Length: 307
Image (cartoon, rainbow, N blue to C red; front, side, top):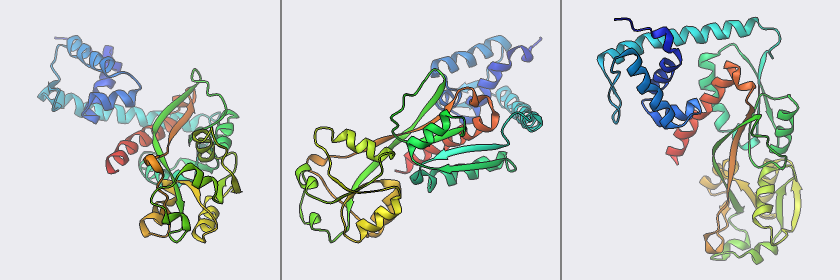
C-alpha cells in the first residue's frame, strides 16, 4: 500500500493543528478557517491515506496510527519552523525587529504574558514596543512603522481587504471616583448627575474617550480636564478632583484595594469597548509576526475563562 503522505501536506498540517489543540473549533480559529472546512480537510486526509486517525472526535482521542503520525508531524513541522527562521534571518530586506504597538492599559497585562510565550520560540528576535493611543498606533501601522497593533476604537477607515482584524474581546470602561467623593452618596447616578460633575478624560486621540463620547451622543459630556496620561488622571481622581471613565485594566488594582470606587448608574448602565488586534495580511506571511498572533490568540481564551 502506498500512502503518498507528501501529496497531502496541507491536510497533514490541518490534522497537526487540530491534534495540537484537541479541538476542531480552536484549530479553525488558529487557521483562520471555518470549523466545517477544517473538519472536511481532516476527513479527506483519512480518505486519501485510507487510515482512521481520530477514534473519538467528541473527546478527541487519536487512534494508534494517529498518535504515531502526530509524533512524526511534530518533528516535521518543528524543523520547518527552524528552517523558516533561518531563511528569514538571511533575508536582509525584512525588518530585524518585530514592531508591536499597544495601548497603555494592555501593555501592563496582555503584552507581558504574550511576550513570555513568544520568547520560547524566538528568544533572540529583537522586539520594539510602541505604547501610544489607539489613533496614533493605527496611523503608524498604516505608515509601515509597526507590524502589528492591539488597540481600541479608531476613527480612520479600516481596509479589511488588506488588513487582518482580530477581535480579542471587550474591555470594560468604568466610571470611577474617590471613595469619599460626594457622588458616592447617591444609590444610583443619572446622566444628569454626571453632567454636573468635574469630568477628567483622556485626550481626543484616546479610544476610551471616543467610545464614551459615542455612547453619550445625545448629550455633550462637559469634559473639564483632559490629559494624555492615564496615571495622572488616576492621581487627580484619587485626590477627589473629579470623576473619570477609565478602562478596567487601568484601574483594577485601585478598585481591588478600595482606593477608587465605581460609580453605579441607573438602569445598571455598563460600558464595554471592543479591543482589536490589527495587522496587514501581507505581514502575516512573516512567521515571526504569525507566531505573535498565535501567542495572543492562545492567551485571550485563557483570560476570558479567568473572568
